[in-house]
Length: 173
Image (cartoon, rainbow, N blue to C red; front, side, top):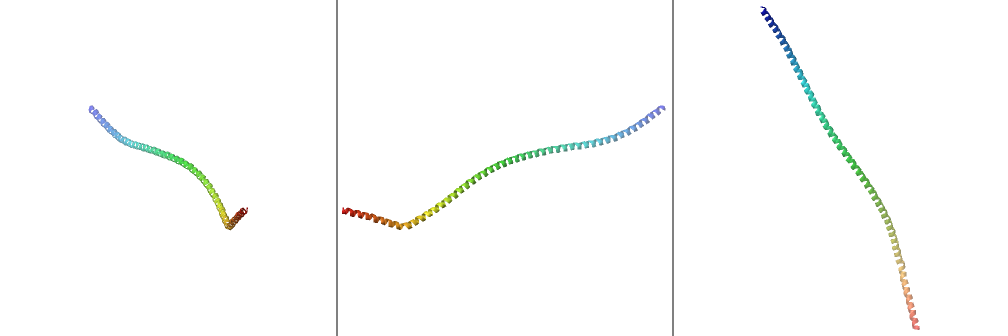
């Protein structure tokens, strides 16, 4: 009996031990479940962090591209403005040259206009002199024409008298 008691006691101890092991197994199972859930949450958070890292990397890449594009545009605009400024300076110098040329032409035109004005005055003076000469000529012709006829007639008479006197004198000799 003692042997059965020991066996019985061993069985009870084993059953007790099995109960404890089951209880510990249940606790470990619950703890394992909790750990799995914690790991899953951690993995989700890590995934989210990885997603955030990827998103951050994408945003940084996009910002770099935008910065490069903006820098290119600024460089293009700067070169465009520099080119326009050079063109404006060239246009300004050409305009100044044209203005100088215009002033020279205007001075020449003014000189020519003065010369034309002087020539017009001279022509007017010559026209007045011509008119005065024509008036004097007309007056002379009107005034001296009868006298010219009379003078011519007188000369003819005088010449005729000399011829007659010469003839008479030649006859008398």
